[in-house]
Length: 518
Image (cartoon, rainbow, N blue to C red):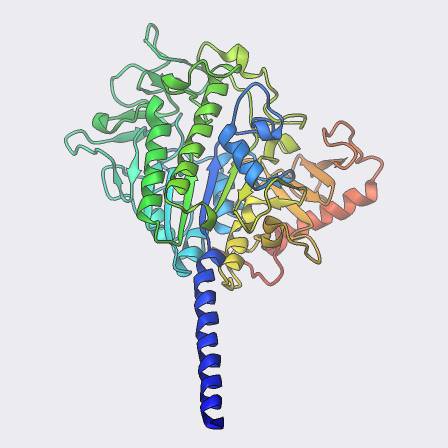
């Protein structure tokens, strides 16, 4: 009898262990969510309803804010596109690598295959990885991209399983999509030639008199005409592959949804990079006239529609609860005159960067402080607002921590683990106490240190003759950066400039990282 009771007790213990083990296994997918990182183009801090916009409507993005957390001190690490995207994928400041400024349309791949990227780190954790949308990090091998051949190396050599790309920007040639290693719709009888120097071909350009254009091209945007719009650079051939600007948003949304559907068994990582709201801003007819800010506001509505398609697919596939969705922008916004769509007078009706000083291409807060929304039902509390300092460059270390991976010492030298901030957890200290910002090159730079912003002017080295001078702002008291305190806070300027130079020289800013000389 006693032996029977002991055997029964052992059986119950074993069963309970298996039950508990089964529950642990069932919870595992929730601990390793699907990840969708939406990095849009040229959206400013004041362009969304959840950040105070009232001349446009962004219900889907506002939904993300309502169901997740809205960050108020998040930054692109550059004020233009290519260096921000480089830093996001590699966890390394782009100014550490010469040649990572705004890339031409025939730029070879800027990231060396074998470099740890967000995609390769997540792929090693068992994720299916995809990129859809604007790439702008180069394709192929030097000296320049040949769009008539296999376009490799590219995203597939950096850890992505699937890629559907705009090679550079909508206002640059070539105006074709690339899927994996090939131009979509390529016709070998009509080879593609691209030039960013001399004019090629005999077709009219935007600079020729009497040409018929959908929208008028401004300075620097008067070269080859594709779909009735003049671009930066010259292109011949590839006519069957040319995109239609009005359909780009729908095409990218459909490809993103298709990737999600194909990856629903999870886990998956989707880097979705909409073209909106980069120029040329050409909304689909169904969005035209829907905002109070002309075509600029209309493409904001179009962007919100793209996000809505993604969220709807997650709902339909019952994936919302197991998916971390992040939305942000690659730099601050600017009201430009490079195209005239007939509604330009309305574009600035709503300040695109809110009260922030500066815009895209400047080192003031308006150039790099951007919207940042994160939703993960059950893990990120709804309706949250966070003032934590963070940057897109932190994605590599954060996603590694999320998936339980240890980064190699030479990976992500400037990427910090911001997972506690993302999840709204209390940490012993913030993920980072500083952040370096750049414009389009290696100099000048800016340094955020807590609430203080040091903006470098002039040359590079603080002690070199004719070296940089600085502006200094206390953002806690002066978010609009109206009062330069550099003359009063000379010791702080000295200390911050020395720290900035040290970060430059040591090749990394993350503790434990090693200098990456690649």
